[in-house]
Image 1: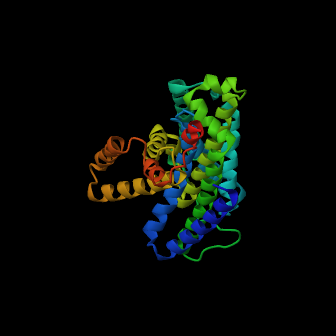
Image 2 (image 1 turned 60 degrees about the horizontal axis):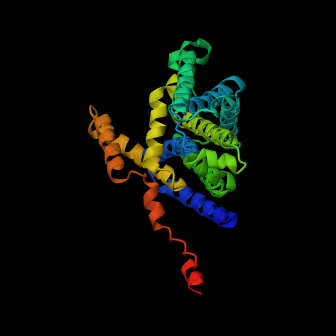
Length: 324
């Protein structure tokens, strides 16, 4: 996709989201906002999966972004959602920059368990730190938006929905451009054969580190948006079940399409919401059955459906040249 085409698609998607939020009920607006936030975190996981890695500790960056936004609001008094989201993404990006040199050389189960261990360490520290709210967490007040303070809770939810939609569309377009770039294609090559990539003169460790930084920044941004939408943060943001949910999303979406990540996030939130309403004592089983059906019938994720709709590239006229 060209940069001009990506920009036009982004503008159209932002306008469509803004109009859609006007007609949706409040519960749908909240659900969509949370879907955008979690979809951003899962998109970071997809970036890693394209390089052959799976992180079971993505909740670490989700939690870092949420706590940065919450503590910045609490300690500095600022309530601007744009600033808080930027701070959350930046804090998680810096945290990823510290961890990346350690993890860039690991693969497979070692990479997965190390990320999980770091996330659970953060969970334990937050649970025992009273100044950060301990196990009870911290409440957040409704944010403002570049000086605009919503007069009602419905207006505040809509404003946060629009902001989350803009952030989501921008991140999706940038990731799509990254996937189509040389470094993004190197991730696929590294997943298939690292030795060949090294012989070509590229560094697999550098590719992994860059992907880890992108995943960290997206995780922090998603965590900050989720904190603002929920109005509360607690150590469960870093718990292993939270990280497992993001892995669930990444598997459900697959790595073939960026759009599929957010469709999977919305679909998962809908399934969880309705199953918990109609099957309050067995909604986890309904969620498990849903995942099982996806694995059986769409092993490559929802993105494989979108990939099938793309027109195939015309084959090179090799036979015609050889016939001459």
